[in-house]
Length: 237
Length: 237
Image (cartoon, rainbow over all chains, first blue to last red; front, side, top):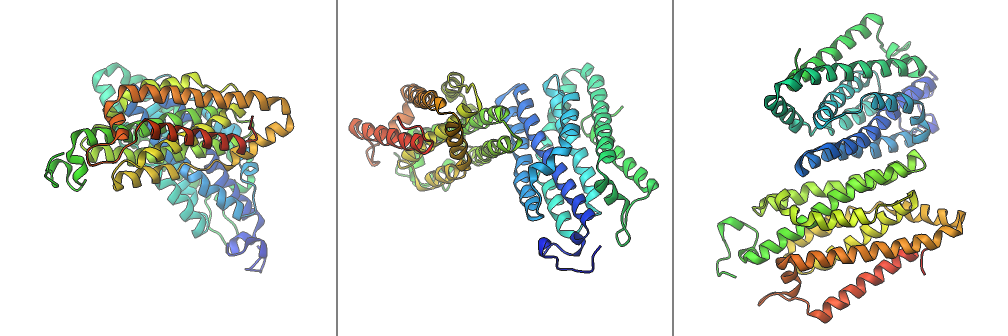
């Protein structure tokens, strides 16, 4: 970190941004969230086609559109940090595209479970990471995450579906586990490839971070919350 | 029209709503706009797949998401008028679905021209009709229409495309005419089938309306504005 709190290129961004690796980590973080929202939008809009009624289709499309509103804000923030938003997103496209390619729902209920579980998992994960960034970035991330919650109808529809046909509960529970597995495997890939992002979690001289044990506890928390969401849906194993 | 300005079932909606045929016309109008926005969203999200870059895709998806924000407000208004929004949309689905089925873009630039021309035409048409409704409904419609304008990038991309390859100008100009023709033919179908909506344009004892000559002038205005948009795109014939 330099001693200068007012680097012209980071005007008003605070002293943390004088550290190039911190800045790179925040750019990575905002970019991966932004690309995640773009592809969530695309997939939700696509999966909305599986809806059995116009009402259901509109409910899922409402979730899709809400994801998208964040993208504009995240892009603006990336630009204010001097980054090209689309260049910044590039490194994360393979992992996120792979996640979706490996978890393409084959029916409406799988689509709903993916929307609920995937969205929740992403929200929890980014909220955990947000604890390690400056206040302004954290507020942006937490506000973005809050806006993506129109998912009560998902719980209702999945529970109705299981009530109507108990046999679908088992496959849907497996589907939920598969979503979690794919998400973890792609997250691991990102962590392995993006040094700045991993360094953010590890902390710095004057920034708190997580040791391996703390990272383990974080994954425990994420797994527990995933289990709670599966219970919400009536899919506890 | 009844003499009662405070019919309980229309609380606060003003005296015009005491006329059941006026109310039916406004329900039709809001419903056709809402379904139009829902399907515009779907089509834009679909056409975004044709984008040559992530940046272009996000630009079109931003237009799609903006269309969708209106749907929530239009639904709320339909409900406050005592209508089931999805039932109210039903009669308009065939015409709008047909429009899209007959105008499925075969490449990215056709998709952009459709987004720009189709959106502009719908906006002009609803703005014309909004002149015949109560202030509150008019404000809702005009606000909804204003929100759907993120289309500067379309003009830029289409002009760039034509500059790069002059041969595509002719087919795109034809495409624009076809869009206009399909839109008019589906609008005619709706007008023929929905008496309340046509009656709204024709006016009532204490409500101004349009005679055939005025309707002719309205279509002239719509056609002129369509021509202006085609010129914007560099597609004047």
